[in-house]
Image 1 (cartoon, one colour):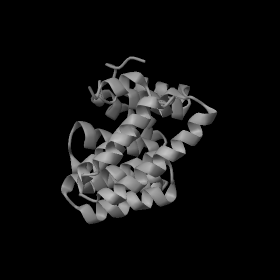
Image 2 (tube, rainbow, N blue to C red):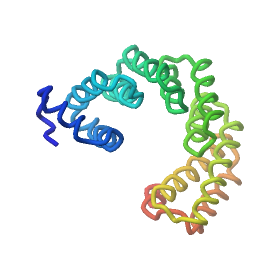
Image 3 (tube, rainbow, N blue to C red):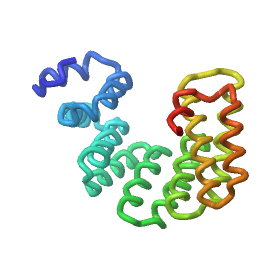
Length: 208
């Protein structure tokens, strides 16, 4: 893939000769390194395959994460939601509202995302929002749920990404307890993580 070639004919060739999801996976990995190429390719996807919700989501991610343009990010997330409402759409909209300081709508979107897909990622996103807004008890409850769910998965498959996320969840939970002034449980979470077969050593080492 030639990431400096914005010629529409070349971009159309990529779209026509590749399965869409792997192509968009590749685009997502390159967003931070070459957002202009990603935007050019995504525009062609929208022209040729306008019902591809993920293309609009990725365009929103560029405007939110790279260009910090909240209005454009919201536009593309709304376009994606019009095509195919999903937990990811609501989580992304929540980030836009959170960046604007609109906590009420941010919480509503995060909660909707969790109701649509009660998984560790959505549980963490709402928990992180609660930490930012001082709702530590609510955050701790969600983080404990995410931790338990990941432990169940790791008993069956020691997937490295789940181990990494598990370690991060445990450290975030310990931090939430610490912010609440509950040093006993904060230290307990850290000690349990140190003994856990699921932790990733380099994640634990970063705390020291």
